[in-house]
Structures are given as structure tokens and as C-alpha cells.
Amino acid sequence: MNELQALATLGGSLALVGGLAGSAIGIGLAATAGVGTLSEDSGQLRNVVVLASLPMTQTFYGLIILIIVLTVVFPNLPTSGHSGMAVLAVGIMGGSAEVFSAIFQGSVCAAGIAMLPKTKGQILTSSMMLAVFVELIGVLGLVFVIMAFSILKFM
Image (cartoon, rainbow, N blue to C red):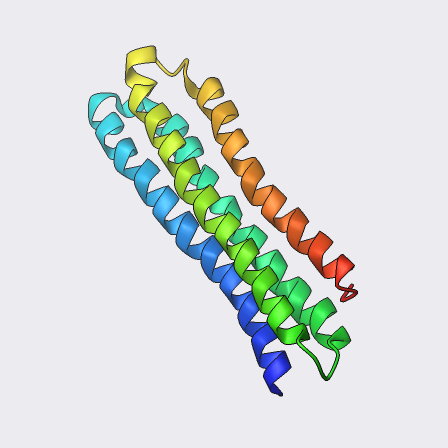
């Protein structure tokens, strides 16, 4: 493996690391609120699990980016120039989108979870809708990575 390939692999790996770290933090924030909610109303378990699991999707987006890098970009990587750095930069961009999206989605979900007992679960749909807005940043991160690789002629 040459330096360009190593940088490209690092870029894809950082996208996955962003998804993993963001999901772990986001789920942790939401689950922490869930523990408090369940101490008040154990009947809210299903709703807590639904909301607490939402930040997990950014891990999958990071994994998709890594798979694209390893299966599509890597074989088409030029052997000279700054292509490895370009893939690294795109991976950092994707990983950043995933980490921040998951963390802030976890915060939104935690707020919704905290209000479940007070609203007798009626806040679930509204909380999910608000969490989807934050999720969109993670989805856009994945879309922008694919667009960048297409513009760079790696796809």
C-alpha cells in the first residue's frame, strides 16, 4: 500500500470513527435521560428505546463511506498527485457531519425522552420529527461525500 492509498483509507476510516463516536455519545445522552424517565414511568420503555436508538444511524452512514472508499474510490485512485489527501479531506468532512449529527440528535432525543412521562407518551411523534431534522445533516454528509467523490472522478 502506498502513501496515497494509506491516506485514502485513513479518510474512509475517519468517516466511520465519526459515525461510531457520535452514535455512542448521542445514544449515551438519550439513554441517560431514559433511565430517569423509566424511574418515573416504566411503561415508557418502548418509547425510550425508539428515541434512544435514533442516533445509531450515523454509524451506518460512516460505514457506507468507508465501504465506498475501499470498494470504489480505492481501485480508481490515481498513483500520483494529491488524490489521497483529497479522499482524506472528504472523509474528514463526512466524519464530522456524522459525529455532530449523532451527538445533537441524541440531545434532541434526550429532551423528548425526558418529557415522555409528563405527556403520557404523546411527545414521541413530535420528538422523532425534530430528531429527523438533525438526522438530515448526517444524510447530507453522506450525500456530499458521494458528490465529492463523483466530482473528483473517483466514482
